[in-house]
Image 1: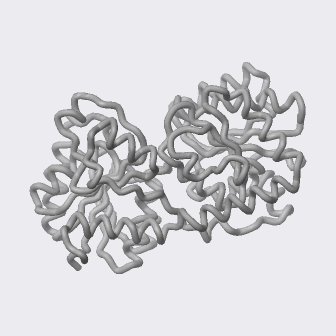
Image 2: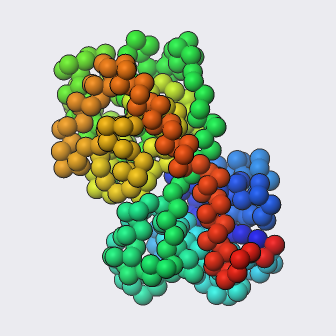
Image 3: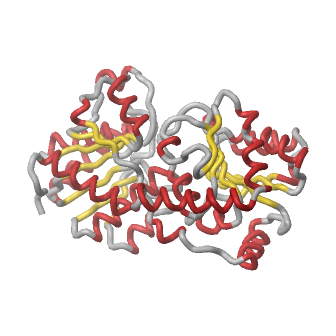
Length: 373
């Protein structure tokens, strides 16, 4: 098949990582794969795998932006020239672009919904869900069907997959100490951490209050935030107001999360309201990190309470500290949950499984058992 993946940008983040991983895996299976986006830090990873990137000025949040109309025109020409079979859109903006491109070049449109959406006039007038829709978790699938009225037969639930081998390495204590030095973390401190953009729903502020409680019982703990975003300065100021500056470390977004995860003892994942699934969550568990998370969205598809981590009701964030302390104190419990975390990711969330099921969706969209080669 000849496949064009569309996304708004390829800067560090879950959707960009998904797009790059999917493109590389499809390429390895013999498909002709192209990615069109506004560019970003992950573009070189495509080049290393022989996937062509097409730079399109599409970085906007408005469906009515002139960039959208120009992108439709430009990508249509490209799709016709490349004889694209499948256009696969990853964001709302590229859903709109993909809808018109697919109509003008006789390709099929597949969209992946990476999270939850709100109804607005644009969604009502131009749903642009495509010929087939991929939902990344059960919660996202039910949201599409029950809230937006998407035909159940058009929606396929396919969990995100990761390149698991990258995260199976066990670091020695000496290697961890050197990484702690590099990130500015105290060697003799336990580390809890989160990898996420600083947005209102991710719960960075909740973790600061959790740390405040943890330190009353266990003073030698540091909290690591890896990421960037609009709310970062706000969280930095809050940590100062709470007197936590010595115990909170902010590190830049990482092209590879392997080293950042290596220095963490417990991975925190605390969205306040909604979460599709979370690639960083899968990467942490593949790295053998037990998880303490809020029970929202698709998180329970990965984290089984009291088995490979702990789930806390989002309405009771004050309960997050207790399971963290249990994991840091009980070595047998920690080892058991660490092993269980890895096992579920290996079993259910491999990139190969994700790509096989995505190929099937493409074939369904094309209306035949095998796609055009």
